[in-house]
Image 1: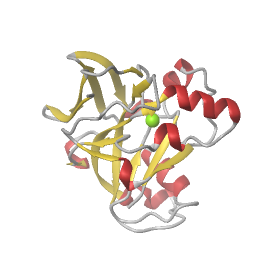
Image 2: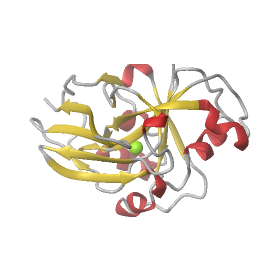
Image 3: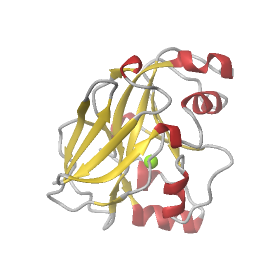
Length: 206
Ligand code: MG
């Protein structure tokens, strides 16, 4: 199982970090050891002083495929979840400035919180609304209709480089509103389905 992640997929978020809005998806990976089970705490890592949350919609890959063509892309996922792409923003900034890879800032142990999956037909797939609350306050609210690259675009693009395998996860990017966490903060992710607001994710920073 691999974890594929898309960066800068919401224009407003790209701008808040002074990044250009990308012409092609920005792709990076996290190893399976990055996964943090929903409800488990994240222990604030000693190598950063600026740990940020990024709430994202996560796709679960439903079948194997390479070089997926656009007309078939929607057949490659049928469940979604919410996840947090934890980021050591200070290390990431350092890596960016030096033109170095990002893994130490993005792919460390516990950097990928993952909630339970819900079937795609529970939501309006083109306009999934989701939000993150920090200590009860809404800090991020996103809608997948604002993505620069749609789920289908992402499947087509990443499968040119990486064979998709059933069970792979794809973090599809974060909307604006990212910010730091401190020890003691509680993060909760909510997904708006057709019929209810589901509390799908929770993580405390310890
Ligand atoms: Mg992210």
